[in-house]
Amino acid sequence: AIYDPYTRQIHAITGTRPEQSTWFTLDAATGKRLKTTVFPFRKMDDPASDGKGRLFAPARKDGIVLVLDARTLKETARWAVGCAVSKVRYQASTHRVLGACATDTPTFFALDADTGRIVSRLPIGYGLDGFAIDEVRQRIVTSNYDGTLTVIDQDGADGFALRGTVSTHMGARMMAMDERDGRLLVVNAAFTNTAPNAKGETTKTYHPDSFVVLTYAPK
Image (cartoon, rainbow, N blue to C red; front, side, top):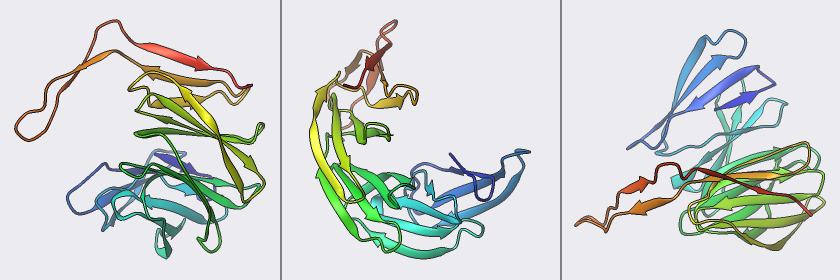
């Protein structure tokens, strides 16, 4: 779910569905549900607000970013990004939409927020989950299921370069950044995966008392 300061509303999005995604819009002050909006996309993730009346909404399985009117949720544009986009953030200082894609084409990208033009694209680790923008150090970091952090340097609106890859733990994909000092907090727990069944499916079992918080300080 995300909070849109322009409308003072909260948008909560359902997970993967066979044919469509549902948004529930709440009044942030009262918690009252204002409306329900259905989109014809199987998987949508949290949108980003520019704070001026637009929402940038990723449709993961379709590889597109929708531009929505923040009050009506009507589509005003759609931009193809060429990968399974699951994370988007609006960066006011550069007027860019920064995002990342998961699945078989793990990619960081930056879009012009007016035209949807792709100004940068870089590879990241496999199994994207966390996405953090360190405005002080001008870096973007993704946390990935393959046990890595991908660190990207930013130089202005269009300058992005891979700084390096930090090893974490396999499965450590959920991350938060402490805005005060830029520390990254990544959580994980030990687990066992069963052998694949006839359908290729596995079952994951987490080990008791194995939860850890991994802390990484910027330098």
